[in-house]
Amino acid sequence: MSVKFFIYIISTVIVIWSLDSININQIFKKNKEKQAKTLYFILAISLIQLITSFTYEIFLSVN
Image (cartoon, rainbow, N blue to C red; front, side, top):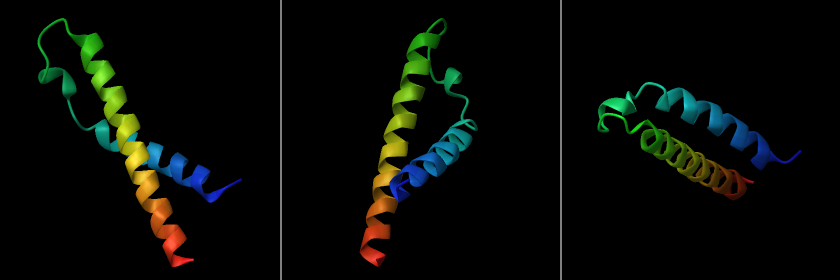
C-alpha cells in the first residue's frame, strides 16, 4: 500500500481525536443538531485532507 494511505489513516485518527474535545453543540442554536453534525463532518474531512496533503508533500520533498 502507498504511504499516502497510511498518512490518511493517521490523520483521520488524530483529527477525530482532536475534534472530540470541542463541544460544538454549544455554538449552535437549539434543535440544530443536523447542521452541527454536518459542519463537524465537513470540518473533519477538510482537516484530514489538509494535514494529509501537507505531510505527503513534506515526505516527497525529503526523499
